[in-house]
Image 1 (cartoon, rainbow, N blue to C red):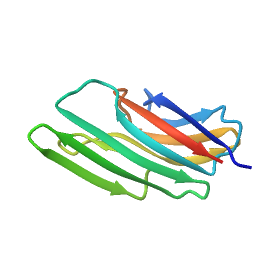
Image 2 (spheres, helix red, strand yellow; image 1 turned 180 degrees about the horizontal axis):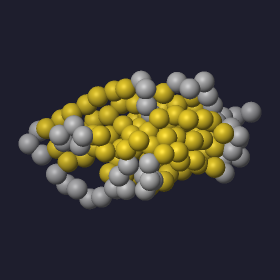
Image 3 (cartoon, rainbow, N blue to C red; image 1 turned 180 degrees about the vertical axis):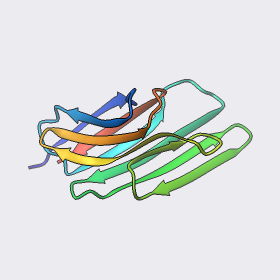
Length: 122
């Protein structure tokens, strides 16, 4: 059975597990794109991450800013990862589970200035 669904949420306001439900299927893979939801013209940050049904996860991060400042990083132990200009983690999440009707992540750094967009494939 092939299923796909897209959605988004604002970064949670509390640390810990955050579940997305209502997909109508158990995902095999989820792709993430995270970005600032404010109109900051001096810099931008984004990450592209993924998780799969067997627990693999990875993420690539990039930051660009005024004065030609660019940072980048990648991790294989988390699926969402954003740092600020001085290297402080501002948003971070790891895989918890693929659920029968969605998925669960664990947020260890949160910031409501970020939107998490996702695409679930089953």
